[in-house]
Image (tube, rainbow, N blue to C red):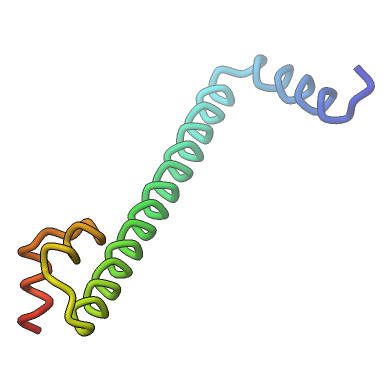
Length: 90
């Protein structure tokens, strides 16, 4: 019980348990923090996937520029043949 973190947690718990409105506000704050972390993580994952997709397209473009077959480029990059045809058109 000498650990400062435990002491702080116990003090906070004691404070919160005394007032209904304080408990409600605490729960709302915790929910908001959880939602924020979830949103940030979701945005991070979305950004990573977008970066991966751009990387696959860039590599596919280089492969096509070296004369590789569309089917092989599709197999190696995971892009659909339609996506690769779109790259060829641009």
